[in-house]
Image 1 (tube, rainbow, N blue to C red):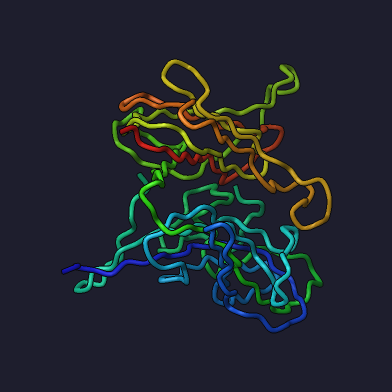
Image 2: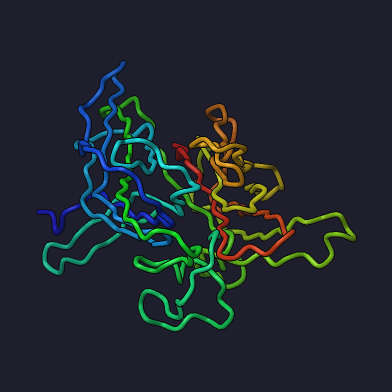
Length: 327
């Protein structure tokens, strides 16, 4: 007999919302089927915001396809009550992710299934979400950006509420023996393993303004970390995650070869999905099956690069890698 239940949970952080008109919406759309590929669209619970407000929500047992399936894609965006995408210039999506979890039937403890820079300064925030004092000179980052905190807004901005939703689309196929499963690995450039032998991810770091950039004509700030890869396999897919100011990240093998490089795509206009100055996407690696391999125990190194023309606080340097294990 199973000792617990399992499900999928969402963690979502969004900030700085403005007022709009309100329309009706549906919580999900019927399943679409095309060449064995099924797809379905869902909406998160309603999130009410005000100008400058921060929402950091966790939703358990979210709506998700049931059964033994293989997920082909999982895309999400913030929409208004009319179902229209919301611009990053109006509501900045800091991050979202969905994870599998287990819940003990007796203790009710939540156990997360393991994985095989902010753009504004929060004001009047002196403690983290657990009430612990922030370190001196902490300008901005994850620790002061928790649910219910507030960004400073311009004088005269009307305090009008707005409702938004996370709209997510899942595409999948029913499981079969012909499907090759992958493991997901997340690398963090702040991981301390290479210095301590213990994995401790700090998640965020600051990029200081360069004092030598003018003289050297070099405004690149680089940070590196190395880890031992736990299994052998073929790289199927990879991409990095960076915040504004990021210029790209690369994952290197022990012999110095490039396993995958990923660069940010900056918007150039005002349309949704092309917001000027914002990172609207990252380039990806999708190598030919079997062409990029990693050996078990191989030391891999992540390098994350940011522009140091000005200071950036609370930035991330993550790399996501999907690997099919060698038989």
